[in-house]
Image (cartoon, rainbow, N blue to C red; front, side, top):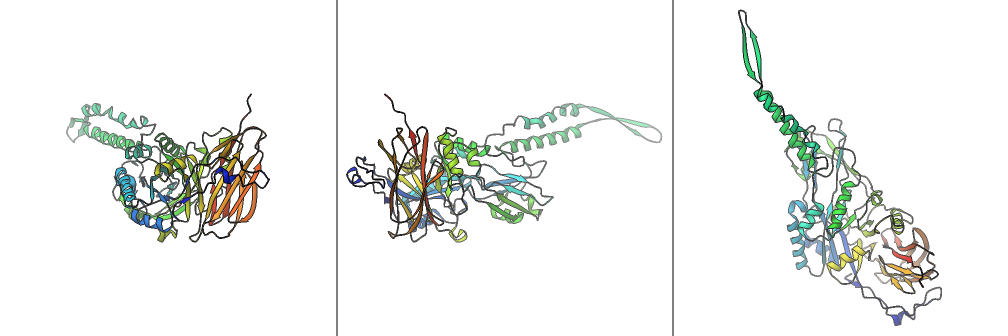
Amino acid sequence: MGAVVTKRLAAGLLAACCVLSGADRAGAEERPLRHSIALAVHVHSTISTGSLSLDQLAAQAKAAGLDGIVLTDNYDLHVGYGVWPLRGLLQFGVNFPSVHQAGETAYLDQIRAAERRHPDLLWIPGVEVMPQYRWTGSLLTGDLTLHDTQKNLLVVGLDDPARLAAAVGGCPYASDWPVRLWPALLAVPIPWLWRKERLVQTRTRYFRLITRRRRRGEAAALAVIASLLLLNNLLTARQPFDPYGPDPGDAPAQRIIDSVREAGGLSFWSLPEAADDHRYRMADLAEQGGALGRAGRLMDWYNGSVSVETRPYLPSLAKTEGYTGFGAVYEDTITATRPGGEWDRLLMAYLDGRRRQPVWGIGERAYHDAGNDQKRFGDIQTVVLADSRSSASVLSALRAGAFYARQRQPAWGLTLDDFTVRGSDGEALSGQTISVHPGQSVTVRLAVSASDNRSEPVEIRVIRSGRLWQRLTASTPFDRQWTDEPPATGAAYYRIEVGQGDQHLISNPVFLTTAQRTG
């Protein structure tokens, strides 16, 4: 496909075009040229859990006609199960390849080297972060279950190793770490026991023998117990969540979101409605990831199995704040983007001032291995409308919502040629805001074509402030305009959906505010 430059008509050409209502676009200002850059977002390589090298991924991207790759290798894919009561010391660990294991500097250096070998592709470094996991059940009852290993965040835009490690790898001591020092209190009586003598009487047939004995055995045993408990508590305190306690909710994820935002990065909730449910024999799980940890092969004796599950977590989108966006197009059931669904509720909360920023919808490829996943590399795309063909410009567009997500077939796909909202004082694109005065109408323009330049039937849906506003069936190439009366006060937004199933696209919203006249 290559980089497709979106054609913007100059003011003189626009003067000849008119809306269906009869209003023309004369006097429209010339728009700055934007580059349409198709990306595969959420891609894994052999650095973590993918089966393809960076060069092989580059070949896949070029064959699919993509302009760039947003790599999101797993940052740290380690889970540990500790045996009570020394969960920190007697721990069975499963550790898969990850960015943290390879080293943040080495990871970013490999991406830069790939960029030099393939300068015709844009390489955007990122990581997939697992904010938490937790255990329920028991080994003894056979219902041991590992939760939330796929309730993850995609973090992009942090190309400095130190900033990346600090933002997503920082692991402060638990807030209750002073309480965890309680085993130190067991050391208080040790000196007294060490010096304390006790009289021991031994009776025989003819006499009674009295000897003095110190309590040094008890003192040594108490010292060993206190040391083990203290070390165990300090080891388990070195994590921001308790994997054996109650569900921590979204607090660990919010911590990651906040630290990424402070570092200048972007974060996206990944596959929020996808379910993951598997069951593994403990030995197989250890073989996949490698049995590691302070207990060595402690669990090899256990011939049982463990369930690994992540339930859809759509409510977390409303319970967290400050992230950039979420997976809105991927190969699974998605309800969040339906009119009036979770996405619209989030956008309305932004309009009402209940959220600090809007959230954007991206397309997630979630690519690991074409052979096992049966996934084509270019089927899910995030198409960015950037000022220039550079990583910095792409990141700015992702931050601003200047992009749309699409699912397509290898033979052809839908292209969003234009989606603008125009008022008397200008126009706005996806992610932007236009201000109009009360009583002034706005024009919504939508133009869609098929990449094979053929006439393809599509369904058009325009959502205004969470409600289905326009719905019709048309054929590509499609170019239509609607006139609308904005609200007398307050704000609104428009977003569009075109097509359905494996041939559709979804835009980010254009916001509209009503300004009061002065003077």
